[in-house]
Image (cartoon, rainbow, N blue to C red; front, top):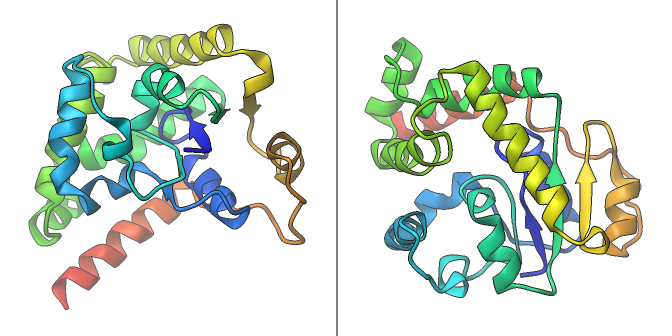
Length: 220
Protein backbone atom coordinates (compact mmCIF):
# COMPACT_ATOMS: atom_id res chain seq x y z
CA UNK A 1 0.00 0.00 0.00
CA UNK A 2 1.64 3.20 -1.22
CA UNK A 3 -1.07 5.84 -0.68
CA UNK A 4 -3.88 6.02 1.88
CA UNK A 5 -6.65 8.51 1.14
CA UNK A 6 -8.32 9.40 4.43
CA UNK A 7 -10.85 11.97 3.23
CA UNK A 8 -14.48 10.90 3.64
CA UNK A 9 -16.90 10.47 0.76
CA UNK A 10 -17.88 13.52 -1.35
CA UNK A 11 -14.60 15.35 -0.78
CA UNK A 12 -13.16 14.61 -4.21
CA UNK A 13 -12.27 10.99 -3.52
CA UNK A 14 -13.30 9.60 -6.91
CA UNK A 15 -11.28 12.29 -8.65
CA UNK A 16 -8.31 11.46 -6.44
CA UNK A 17 -8.70 7.78 -7.30
CA UNK A 18 -8.49 8.60 -11.01
CA UNK A 19 -5.52 10.89 -10.40
CA UNK A 20 -3.60 8.28 -8.40
CA UNK A 21 -4.17 5.66 -11.05
CA UNK A 22 -3.05 8.07 -13.75
CA UNK A 23 0.16 8.67 -11.76
CA UNK A 24 0.90 4.97 -11.40
CA UNK A 25 -0.44 4.39 -7.88
CA UNK A 26 -3.19 2.00 -8.87
CA UNK A 27 -5.26 0.00 -8.76
CA UNK A 28 -6.88 2.26 -6.20
CA UNK A 29 -9.60 0.91 -3.90
CA UNK A 30 -12.69 3.12 -3.60
CA UNK A 31 -15.92 2.56 -1.70
CA UNK A 32 -17.62 1.60 -4.94
CA UNK A 33 -15.35 -1.49 -5.10
CA UNK A 34 -16.74 -3.05 -1.93
CA UNK A 35 -19.17 -5.20 -3.89
CA UNK A 36 -16.40 -6.40 -6.17
CA UNK A 37 -15.16 -8.45 -3.21
CA UNK A 38 -18.18 -9.80 -1.29
CA UNK A 39 -15.92 -12.34 0.40
CA UNK A 40 -14.23 -9.44 2.22
CA UNK A 41 -17.38 -7.98 3.77
CA UNK A 42 -16.85 -10.05 6.90
CA UNK A 43 -13.39 -8.51 7.27
CA UNK A 44 -14.81 -5.00 7.08
CA UNK A 45 -17.45 -5.94 9.66
CA UNK A 46 -14.75 -7.35 11.91
CA UNK A 47 -12.78 -4.12 11.64
CA UNK A 48 -15.91 -2.14 12.50
CA UNK A 49 -16.38 -4.33 15.57
CA UNK A 50 -12.90 -3.39 16.71
CA UNK A 51 -11.25 -6.71 15.86
CA UNK A 52 -7.78 -6.93 14.39
CA UNK A 53 -7.88 -7.74 10.69
CA UNK A 54 -5.31 -8.54 8.04
CA UNK A 55 -5.40 -5.38 5.96
CA UNK A 56 -3.37 -7.09 3.25
CA UNK A 57 -6.32 -9.46 2.84
CA UNK A 58 -8.89 -6.66 2.94
CA UNK A 59 -7.09 -4.62 0.26
CA UNK A 60 -5.41 -7.39 -1.72
CA UNK A 61 -4.73 -6.36 -5.30
CA UNK A 62 -4.65 -2.61 -4.59
CA UNK A 63 -1.73 -0.26 -4.05
CA UNK A 64 -3.76 2.73 -2.86
CA UNK A 65 -7.11 3.39 -1.22
CA UNK A 66 -9.48 6.36 -0.97
CA UNK A 67 -12.99 7.11 0.31
CA UNK A 68 -15.11 5.17 2.77
CA UNK A 69 -14.92 2.60 4.22
CA UNK A 70 -11.13 2.87 4.38
CA UNK A 71 -11.28 6.46 5.64
CA UNK A 72 -13.12 5.28 8.75
CA UNK A 73 -10.12 3.08 9.58
CA UNK A 74 -7.39 5.54 8.78
CA UNK A 75 -5.50 5.00 12.02
CA UNK A 76 -5.36 1.24 11.53
CA UNK A 77 -4.28 1.64 7.91
CA UNK A 78 -1.64 4.22 8.78
CA UNK A 79 -0.20 1.84 11.37
CA UNK A 80 -0.41 -1.19 9.09
CA UNK A 81 1.43 0.61 6.27
CA UNK A 82 3.95 2.93 7.96
CA UNK A 83 5.65 3.82 4.67
CA UNK A 84 2.45 4.80 2.87
CA UNK A 85 1.77 8.45 2.11
CA UNK A 86 -1.47 9.87 3.50
CA UNK A 87 -3.78 12.24 1.65
CA UNK A 88 -6.69 14.08 3.26
CA UNK A 89 -9.23 15.55 0.83
CA UNK A 90 -11.34 18.31 2.37
CA UNK A 91 -14.00 20.81 1.37
CA UNK A 92 -16.18 23.33 3.21
CA UNK A 93 -18.40 21.54 5.69
CA UNK A 94 -21.76 22.87 4.50
CA UNK A 95 -21.03 22.05 0.87
CA UNK A 96 -19.87 18.60 1.90
CA UNK A 97 -23.03 17.89 3.88
CA UNK A 98 -25.28 19.07 1.07
CA UNK A 99 -23.41 16.91 -1.45
CA UNK A 100 -23.62 13.78 0.70
CA UNK A 101 -27.32 14.39 1.34
CA UNK A 102 -28.05 14.69 -2.37
CA UNK A 103 -26.06 11.61 -3.40
CA UNK A 104 -24.80 8.74 -1.26
CA UNK A 105 -27.12 9.34 1.71
CA UNK A 106 -30.11 9.56 -0.59
CA UNK A 107 -28.94 6.39 -2.35
CA UNK A 108 -27.72 4.35 0.61
CA UNK A 109 -29.15 6.07 3.67
CA UNK A 110 -31.99 4.98 5.92
CA UNK A 111 -34.61 7.44 4.71
CA UNK A 112 -37.52 6.53 2.43
CA UNK A 113 -36.42 5.73 -1.12
CA UNK A 114 -37.74 7.96 -3.89
CA UNK A 115 -38.74 6.41 -7.21
CA UNK A 116 -35.26 6.66 -8.74
CA UNK A 117 -33.57 5.08 -5.75
CA UNK A 118 -36.23 2.39 -5.35
CA UNK A 119 -35.85 1.40 -9.01
CA UNK A 120 -32.07 1.17 -8.69
CA UNK A 121 -32.32 -0.98 -5.58
CA UNK A 122 -34.83 -3.23 -7.31
CA UNK A 123 -32.90 -3.67 -10.56
CA UNK A 124 -29.18 -3.57 -9.74
CA UNK A 125 -27.93 -6.90 -8.50
CA UNK A 126 -26.16 -6.69 -5.14
CA UNK A 127 -27.28 -3.14 -4.39
CA UNK A 128 -29.31 -4.33 -1.40
CA UNK A 129 -26.13 -5.81 0.10
CA UNK A 130 -24.19 -2.63 -0.68
CA UNK A 131 -26.88 -0.47 0.92
CA UNK A 132 -26.93 -2.60 4.07
CA UNK A 133 -23.13 -2.38 4.22
CA UNK A 134 -23.24 1.43 3.95
CA UNK A 135 -25.76 1.63 6.76
CA UNK A 136 -23.69 -0.55 9.08
CA UNK A 137 -20.34 0.95 8.29
CA UNK A 138 -21.04 4.62 7.58
CA UNK A 139 -24.45 5.87 8.67
CA UNK A 140 -24.75 3.75 11.84
CA UNK A 141 -21.01 3.41 12.44
CA UNK A 142 -19.11 6.54 11.45
CA UNK A 143 -22.06 8.87 12.11
CA UNK A 144 -23.63 6.94 14.97
CA UNK A 145 -27.02 6.81 13.28
CA UNK A 146 -27.29 10.61 13.30
CA UNK A 147 -26.32 11.77 9.82
CA UNK A 148 -29.75 13.40 9.39
CA UNK A 149 -28.76 15.76 12.21
CA UNK A 150 -26.84 18.26 10.11
CA UNK A 151 -25.02 19.91 12.99
CA UNK A 152 -23.91 16.59 14.44
CA UNK A 153 -22.81 15.15 11.09
CA UNK A 154 -20.74 18.24 10.32
CA UNK A 155 -19.17 17.99 13.77
CA UNK A 156 -18.14 14.38 13.07
CA UNK A 157 -16.72 15.41 9.69
CA UNK A 158 -14.71 18.27 11.15
CA UNK A 159 -13.46 16.17 14.05
CA UNK A 160 -12.27 13.51 11.61
CA UNK A 161 -10.30 16.01 9.57
CA UNK A 162 -8.86 17.65 12.69
CA UNK A 163 -7.72 14.31 14.09
CA UNK A 164 -5.89 13.42 10.88
CA UNK A 165 -4.11 16.78 10.75
CA UNK A 166 -3.24 16.59 14.43
CA UNK A 167 -2.00 13.01 14.57
CA UNK A 168 -0.31 12.35 11.21
CA UNK A 169 3.25 13.63 10.91
CA UNK A 170 3.29 16.64 8.54
CA UNK A 171 5.98 15.07 6.36
CA UNK A 172 3.68 12.14 5.67
CA UNK A 173 0.47 14.10 5.06
CA UNK A 174 -0.94 16.11 2.16
CA UNK A 175 -4.18 18.04 2.61
CA UNK A 176 -5.94 18.52 -0.73
CA UNK A 177 -8.56 21.22 -1.25
CA UNK A 178 -10.90 21.65 -4.24
CA UNK A 179 -9.18 23.04 -7.31
CA UNK A 180 -5.65 22.22 -6.11
CA UNK A 181 -4.91 20.36 -9.33
CA UNK A 182 -1.90 18.20 -10.07
CA UNK A 183 0.97 20.26 -8.68
CA UNK A 184 0.77 19.62 -4.92
CA UNK A 185 -0.15 15.96 -5.41
CA UNK A 186 2.71 15.30 -7.82
CA UNK A 187 5.22 17.14 -5.65
CA UNK A 188 4.07 15.14 -2.62
CA UNK A 189 4.39 11.83 -4.45
CA UNK A 190 7.56 12.76 -6.31
CA UNK A 191 6.24 12.26 -9.82
CA UNK A 192 5.97 14.48 -12.93
CA UNK A 193 2.86 16.57 -13.56
CA UNK A 194 0.75 15.10 -16.41
CA UNK A 195 -0.01 17.27 -19.41
CA UNK A 196 -3.78 16.96 -18.99
CA UNK A 197 -6.49 18.38 -16.73
CA UNK A 198 -6.86 17.01 -13.23
CA UNK A 199 -9.88 14.62 -13.08
CA UNK A 200 -13.21 16.05 -11.96
CA UNK A 201 -15.64 13.20 -11.28
CA UNK A 202 -17.42 14.06 -8.06
CA UNK A 203 -20.29 16.39 -8.92
CA UNK A 204 -23.82 15.10 -8.11
CA UNK A 205 -24.86 14.98 -11.76
CA UNK A 206 -22.07 12.53 -12.54
CA UNK A 207 -23.03 10.45 -9.50
CA UNK A 208 -26.62 10.04 -10.69
CA UNK A 209 -25.48 9.47 -14.26
CA UNK A 210 -23.44 6.53 -13.00
CA UNK A 211 -26.46 5.20 -11.11
CA UNK A 212 -28.66 5.50 -14.21
CA UNK A 213 -26.02 3.77 -16.32
CA UNK A 214 -25.84 0.88 -13.85
CA UNK A 215 -29.64 0.55 -13.91
CA UNK A 216 -29.69 0.50 -17.73
CA UNK A 217 -26.90 -2.06 -17.80
CA UNK A 218 -28.74 -4.27 -15.31
CA UNK A 219 -31.90 -4.22 -17.42
CA UNK A 220 -30.12 -5.32 -20.59
